[in-house]
Length: 69
Image 1 (tube, rainbow, N blue to C red):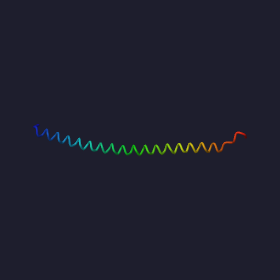
Image 2: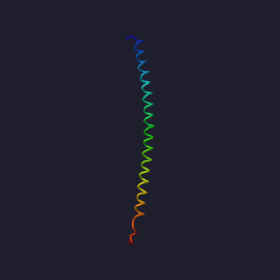
Image 3: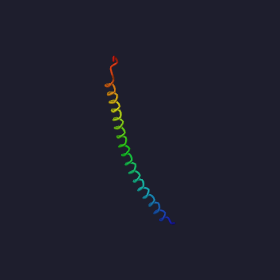
Image 4: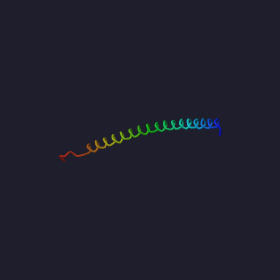
């Protein structure tokens, strides 16, 4: 393998690595978007669960008999 062939091989490898790096960056970006969506969903669900629990406690208190009965 002469010097020119080695340079061509190195350039090809570098180009492939650049392409792979771009693809991986796009993948990481899409994954981060999905993580952000899932975090927002978890926050909303946690808020709904807390609200439901708070409302459940309020209903139970409203249905209790006063202590003098």
